Length: 309
Image (cartoon, rainbow, N blue to C red; front, top):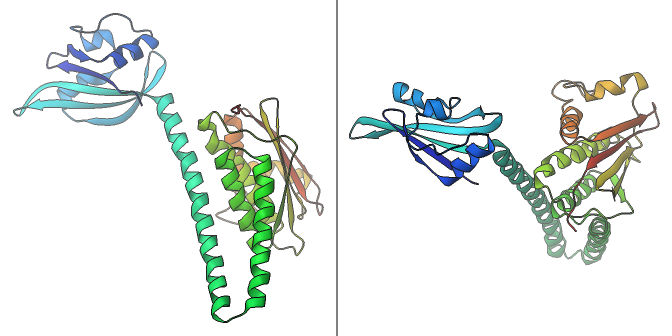
């Protein structure tokens, strides 16, 4: 991340500015050589002169620099117990936001790996117990079962999803639902390439994850609970649908499921679809809902998706 630095002396005159700061000022429409100029005349929106009076640092303050959103940290400069000036460090807010969202994508990936490690250890304990009790026939049957399930899930995910974060998340979700007795069927025709704009990853996971969680919750009390996820990549769009065979939603209640805190599961629930809708709006995506009481629910989603070649 590029840091821009500007410093003033005790007379509020600019005495130091790096090239990154000059570039940032130009992008905000502030031209000219700032050295020697009054900070108030050069950048009136920057309250750096206030540091000379308050002598109190301010961290990560958001402000607009001629319409450009920046995050600023300002500190007084003290030498031999005397105030000699003040220093400001800028960061472009859009660049900072992009970095945070990339780290969030890494967090999702790490959480997926954590879940898979936990699942692997559980299976390993079962295998060790069978070996210890010499239950070799049961061991053969069990290892065949988990091997077949893994190969089936891995094969369909690797065929349809080339992005490692989304693929890892789906592998974790398929495994988690299988252990809960819920079958998630995955299908599609056009493989999803790696996501180019990593800053969109967290929003896509939020939408996909909350719809899958909602569908799994809808069928959690059914013996034949089933969720169908269909993924496609068409014309730089991620298109997917999540369909369950749960109890469905009354037509007059469909809009309520997007409201914060509204849930049939009671207090403390009802935030998943609300957060998914916020993420969808931020991506300029769209979705439709089809549901009838007693015949399940289907969400169809379309969001812009810039994939790597």
